[in-house]
Length: 204
Image (cartoon, rainbow, N blue to C red; front, side, top):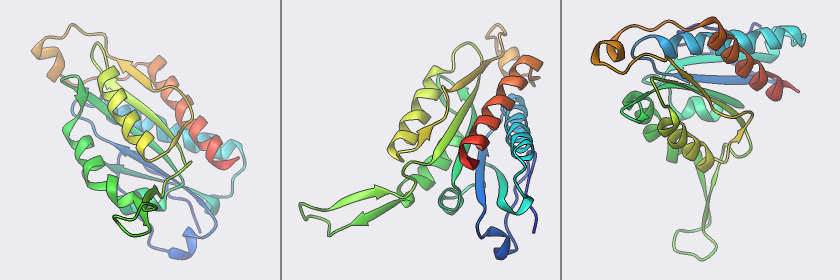
């Protein structure tokens, strides 16, 4: 049995026996100009490194990394912890990341009782699970952060740290906005720290 780690690739479990008794971390990302993809790679690296430092046996921890366009509600429900990483576009979540949440959100609730009954309620199946959020931005990032934080609040997820916003610091011209980006060493270290914190929280 072995853990599944990835960098910018979609992975799935083919051996169900390897899924028993382990902790699964789902990393969902979208990137338009490369910065969020590099951040996702750093998040994954940080999580993997902490798991190795903690001496977690390979069969007891796995990371499933998926682009937002490929991630599903089933992926969400099968994980015990989450890392979300996306760019801010026009002061809001990037469309691909928003579509992932739109597709997945309501499928992660369980109905209790009969609709119309005073005791009817809907409970998130993700209640209490830890998550970390990283936003790639130009000069702000808070709009996208607030949107995803509200969604995670609806799922009743528990944040492990303040949202990490990585601003590229470029003048917001058309050319700069559309250009490929490179993650700085300082920002890479912060992403690794967040990924490691999520892994440690999940595995303690």
